[in-house]
Image (cartoon, rainbow, N blue to C red; front, side, top):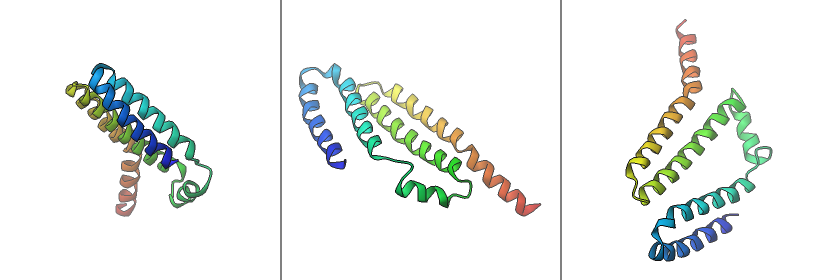
Length: 127
């Protein structure tokens, strides 16, 4: 799987260099296609039912709920970074900042279950 992603990145870089030289306006769309293709390749190799994820789920005291929050946080971080970089490369710096701000807000909202757990634990020690 990683060989496919590396090959996709290499081919995408070569085609992107040509595209940037002859038709710069299409570059953001080409980058989005490459990113979506890479994410689909990665998605196919992931399985939540097998191996490491099942073992990792058992380690969390709250089980699947908190692990899903962590996984969503990681996904939001990656998607936000990729999207903001595409916006910046296409010359739209303000849109890139807006995307990053939205990603940060989503991470804060997503972390609320963790903050609640910590507060409840602290209160149980006090009271």
